[in-house]
Each structure stands twice: as C-alpha cells, then as structure tokens.
Length: 420
Image (cartoon, rainbow, N blue to C red; front, side, top):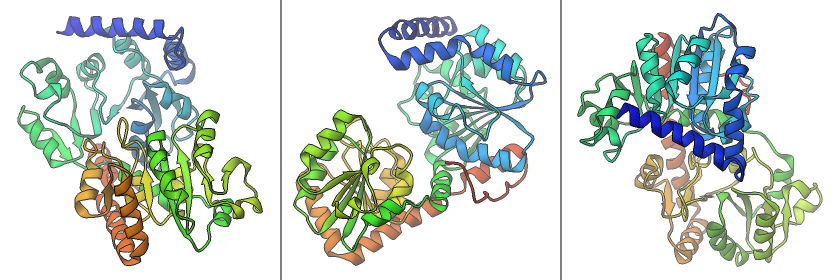
C-alpha cells in the first residue's frame, strides 16, 4: 500500500504539472513547488527549531490562525514556519506577518519529506483539520518530533474506519495528540484503538470572536444604513442571488448589502441586471450617492466578516451548490442566519438549526415566508439572533485547550490590534 501511495502522489504531481499549461491554479502550485527548497534555504535559520504549522488552504489557515497568534503573543522570539498546499491559501497569506516564513509544502514523497524536515528542524509540527500526509507523518515520528492535528473532525465514511483502512490508520498513530472537534470523533477513534485524543472544539469560534472584537468600521456603509430593515447576503452565488433579488425587488421597506463570492465584472453586471432598485457598488460609492441606494454591492475582498455587523439578519450563500460558506462570521454578531439546503456536512449549521439560531430554505416561497415573518416579529428576530450569538460564545476556547496541552501554560489574552 505504501508503494501505491507514493506512485499515486508522483502521478498526481505530474498531472498538476500538465494541468498548469491551461489552469492558473495548477501553474502557481507547480511554480511554487519548484523552488520551495531554495526558498527555505534562503529564508530559514540554519539552526532550524521552527514550529511548523501546515494548513491545506485559506479556510484551514483561519482555523490555525488563533493558535499561531497565541504562540506569537506568548513567545515573540519563537520561530514559526507556515506551509500551504493550495495556491488559494499561499497567494493570499504569503506575506502574513505573524510567522517567520511562508511556503508551499512539497509533494508528499519520501525524499521531499526527509529533505524538508532536515532543513526546518521543527520542534513540533501542527497540522490543521484534514491534513494527513503519510511520508511527512512517518518521518516526524521516526525523528521523535511531537506532532499534532487540531480542529479535526472524523466521520464513519472515512477510510480510517473501513476494513481496508490499515494504511490510513497508521498515519493516525504518528500523532502525539489529536485535537478533535466533538465527542463523536473521539469515539470513532477509540473504536480503532486511537486513544491519544482530546476533545478541544473548533478554533474557528475563537477566530470569529476575535474578528468581532476587532471589526472594522466602514463610514460609507454607515451612511448607507437608515431606519429601514437591513440584511446582508454574504458569499452569494447566482443560485442564491436569484432568490434573494426576487424577494428584495418587492420589498421597498428593506435595504440589502450583498457580498458575492465571485466579484468579476461579468458576475457583478449579472447581479445589477436583476435588480430594479437603486444600486451602488462599494468601489464607486461616495458619502452622497450611497445614501440614495437601496442595495449596496460589495465588490472588494476582505470586508465581509466586519460587514455582517450592519445587518439585522444574514443569508449565507453556497447552499444551493457545493456547500454553505462560513456562517460563524455572521452568527457571532448575534443575528439570525439562513442558508440553502446543502449544509448537512457542516456541524455548526446543524447545531445552530437545532438550537433555533438558524434557518434553512429550499425554494423561494420558504425564503419569502421566513424573512417576512422575522421582519414582522422583532421579538422573534432578536431571540433567534441571541441564540446564534450565545452558541458562538459557548463554543469558544479551543485555542486555550490546545495551547495548554502543547506548551504547558495558558496563553495571554489577544492584544487589541490583531491583523486582518
């Protein structure tokens, strides 16, 4: 099985290289992988002794970020290396100031794993959520380097729990400690003899709490807001927008802030063509013209997590496609959240629905009835929002649990100028 795994990784590497001729993401990954060892030699201290934190992509980075920043606060001189596998993570965070070096993780081949660890000389390795690379994990174990995985969650359908999963179970035995999100994951692992497990929760809750505490103020958006009911549609896709805009066009007593997932010109024009009410893009707004608009389209990145604070409720996109986007960024402000039907693999969505702090809709009539009901009953709106906010507050604290277990002490409180 080990040989098949290595052949598969080598074959995948070649496929990515070939795809790079016509796919920008694959090209960036190939180029980044090509000079990663030279990059490390140039930017790392020969002494090594780095805390190595690996996140597959941007979403996993956000889960690891609270731990990275706790480590930096408590040990300013400690060296930290951050690696990504996906260009969507590396390209956005390659200049992240809280670590000493950011690079791609070389493909998981035996020679790469040995060379990488010899250069980095990590004091510990921390993987985020779903990163299981056999050669790296076995090389770390062979060298006696403490290895952890955080904010992970397990399901019975995964290979670890199948009769043929012996090779994959051996990866789990390489970890010094596994920090899982829930008790169900711990029980699954116990069933295959993995007992070095701590139920710590999900560090994303700590991250969204920090974002809320450091939420940016946007004077232009404040100028947009008036006494009307304002709601935010975040990370929307065309399937979401068809329902949202149909509803909004018929509600002159409401205002809408919409932050689409994709902000290319073609998509923005598509949104604008569906709206029959005064609309302005954020990039074109001024204190004068934004007051005349009923719909504000956010056509820049990096604002959404702070913008939710201006709404009385939020619609989270993606639920009519591959899956909903981050609902926690909205719920942390104590407002109800709603989303489409594809949410079942997201534990926080299931829990919020069960608690009464979120709603799911499957078609236009449900969306219309739900929003009209919340607008007509402010007490229900407030109570639902409180449930959502309380859920986030109760789930926070995973970073402290992990930090104490790994470093033997409680981290200091975050400072008030966490970088965004």
